Length: 210
Image (cartoon, rainbow, N blue to C red; front, side, top):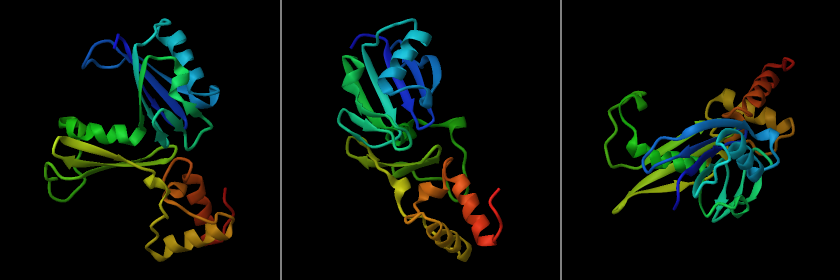
């Protein structure tokens, strides 16, 4: 595969691009594009290469997509982009779910990359999980196998919201009564979910949402 290689993290709000000029190298010419300002992935890739990468044609690409992927096809969960990476015209393209890519990175983190949150230190070699609230709520796992690690992508942000306390259950009931028939974790625990959570709290407390 000829160099450079295109790498990207495609979310529902921002698409982050970079070029890797050598094996093991860090991304260069990094740029962030607004997803809403582009018709689709091919349009955004073309804009990045023309405006930030000197018009170079990458020999390969690895793209992490915030949504389900199926072989060469993708669909952003929280934006209108969908299609096939074959449209990019790049000789070889690897397509991953964005949190699958994050899960793969977990064994390589060390030092300042890690901050303990409590409890005993984690045991090396056990199953790992990564989750994060962004435009949506991403979730993925990493399972130890004989050859190393196996990422387990998924759309775990769409599980039913785990309401436990009385207040949490009241919020879920209020949002259902307000027209949201199914309340999943992403509906409340994400960037797009925060206004909905605010509305649910206002409904429970009997005040007008601001």
